[in-house]
Image 1 (cartoon, rainbow, N blue to C red):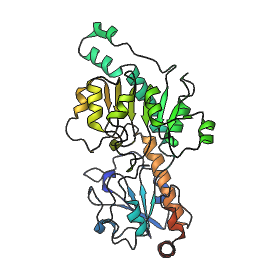
Image 2: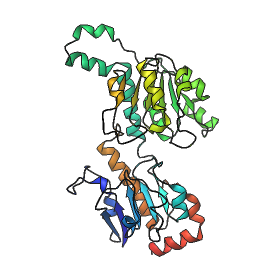
Image 3: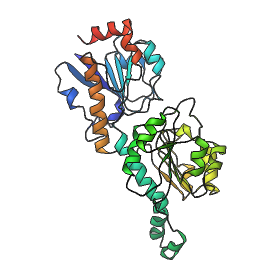
Image 4: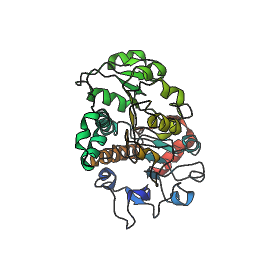
Amino acid sequence: MFQVTLTADFYDANGNPKYADLGLDSLKNRSNIQVNSFSEHRKEITPDQIAASNALLVLTPSVTRQTVSSADNLLAIARFGVGYDSVDVPACTAANVAVCITTGAVDRPVAEAVVGWMISLSHNVLIKDRLVRQGLWDQRSNHMGSELRNRTLGLIGAGGIARKLVSLLSNWDMNPPLAFDPFLKPETAKQLGIELVPLDTLLSQSDFVSIHCPLTDQTRNLIGPRELSLMKPTAYLINSARGGIIHEDSLYTALKEKRIAGAALDCFTTEPVTTPSRFADLENVLLAPHSIAWTNELFRDIGRTASQSLLDLTQHKPPHGLLNPELLSSPAFQEKWKRLCL
């Protein structure tokens, strides 16, 4: 039996599933695959937890070098999503463990959430909600909003989510979108109707700056005090990617002093946020606990995609979303693959 183990954070304290549909039917319906779960949640997966596992389906715990220090029987780790800064991919590669992400499965829900945030920010939805709750009806004229029409969207990173966002906004009469992405080819950008520009140009010309790049050594604190100073005072910053990409102290100061119009933040430098965030005191900020795009459809589709990656491996096929494809030509990985997937 090929043993697939879910991290414990898919379940509540009583062992009941937290989510309506994890999209795992294709795994559970296979006679040669057994689906289990960890008995307890740990922030970092430990070697003893993976001892009986051939594959892991991971929601939030970290995967470190220590995790895979004794991974003779672990073939693959499937991240439940597309971010992988919590996974030490080089360590997994050294341990002959394939790492997969669910490329494509998150594009629509994240893009849809960003559209919702753009409208909510520019129409002062949070402020207007509070006016009614506090009986301040007569103050509504002080909070005029603005439309998306004739505004410019700037994309930091132009992968699948950003491209779906452009598609969803294609009939909103916005200006052609700008993008900063060192990996996007000019001919591809042209086909997508996106103008590639330097980061400084994007920041100074965009009305909405939406972050869609991974957190890496190159993108950590990519948006700091200098970059924020380039933004229009009427512009909004949206982060649905990773918290460490923005220098939070600088953003807080810029928002408090209203040097930019507002921000929407789904992720933070330190997570989870278990005490009230300082950003909550600002009326020009929308906040979410790294779940703004979480829908039943999202979790179903992520699970289906992750399941297919693991099924591919059991059938000796290159899996979808493989982050370390060099393993496919590694004799040591090939030997493990054959041994665990007879």
